[in-house]
Image 1 (cartoon, rainbow, N blue to C red):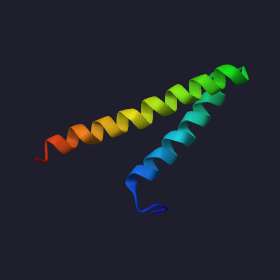
Image 2 (cartoon, rainbow, N blue to C red):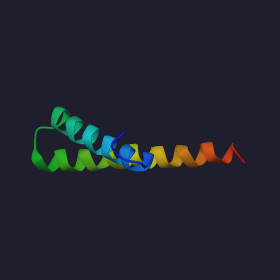
Image 3 (tube, helix red, strand yellow):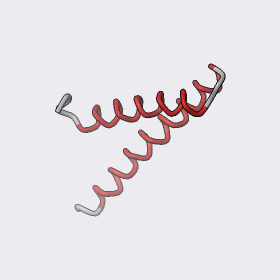
Image 4 (spheres, helix red, strand yellow):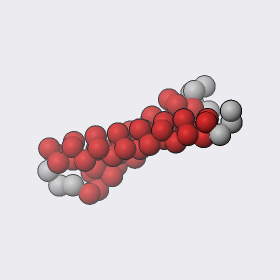
Length: 59
C-alpha cells in the first residue's frame, strides 16, 4: 500500500480518475478544469459521506 491512510489513497484515486475523465470527455481547457473539479468533488465527497454512513451502522 502506498499510504497508511485509506483516505489519502482514495483522494489520490479520485484525483487521477477525475483528470483522465476530464481529458476524455471535454475538449476545451476551461471546461476540462470545471468538469474535473466537479468529478473530483463528487467522488471524494461521496466516498467520505458513504464512509460516515457506514460508520453509523457500526455503533
